Length: 62
Image (cartoon, rainbow, N blue to C red; front, side, top):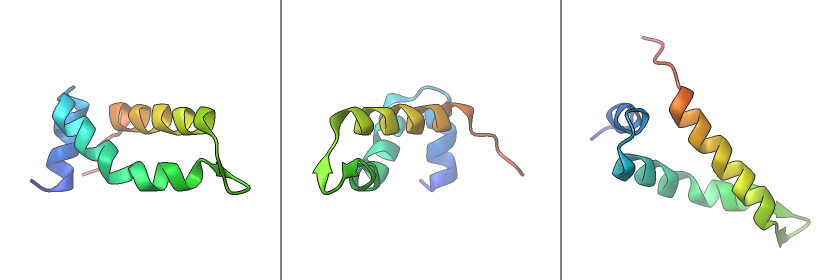
């Protein structure tokens, strides 16, 4: 399944698709949750919430 199909399924509420996208972006979320080299759990949670919002509200431009 390509990313576009995965995103469509995630937008429809498919938990497996959401989890797969989350796992794809997890390293980036962790990297961006580091503040002066220290992992910030609150920031990680905020970034995760933003990712989930982006999935939910993504509009297909085609």
